[in-house]
Image 1 (cartoon, rainbow, N blue to C red):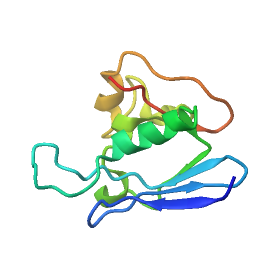
Image 2 (cartoon, rainbow, N blue to C red; image 1 turned 90 degrees about the vertical axis):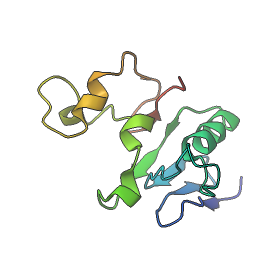
Image 3 (cartoon, helix red, strand yellow; image 1 turned 120 degrees about the vertical axis):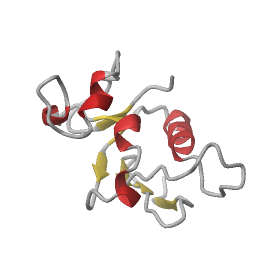
Image 4 (spheres, rainbow, N blue to C red; image 1 turned 135 degrees about the vertical axis):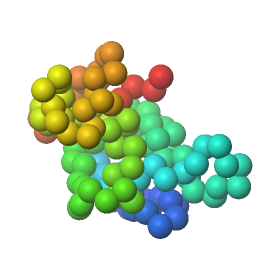
Amino acid sequence: MTAKITFFPLGNADTTRIDLANGQTVLVGYANMRCADDDTDGRCDLPVLLRQALKDTNRDDYDVVCFSHLDTDHVKGATDFFWFRHASKYQGASCTSPFAARYKRVGSRNTTGSGSRIAARRSP
């Protein structure tokens, strides 16, 4: 397999997927900036594209996900797309993170995978 870098058309935001020659995948940032209610919004439907890429490669996780910083144009929608299995401080009733409410309302979580991979949430 040849290594490949994919830049997603998100306007003034950043998400890049790196497919390594050894089959590992790296996602840098996650900014789902598209407005689903606006038919003229030319930005990509990021969760749909990433889920399709995972499905095409028979995966449900990334080997590495990197967030350079927590500005909206680098993390918007990340807590809706990912299950941060190894970040317990963002999970449970005692969490004080602004992301806590999103985790509390999710009934089932994807726990497939191993190591430090970040799993994508299953499609509704």
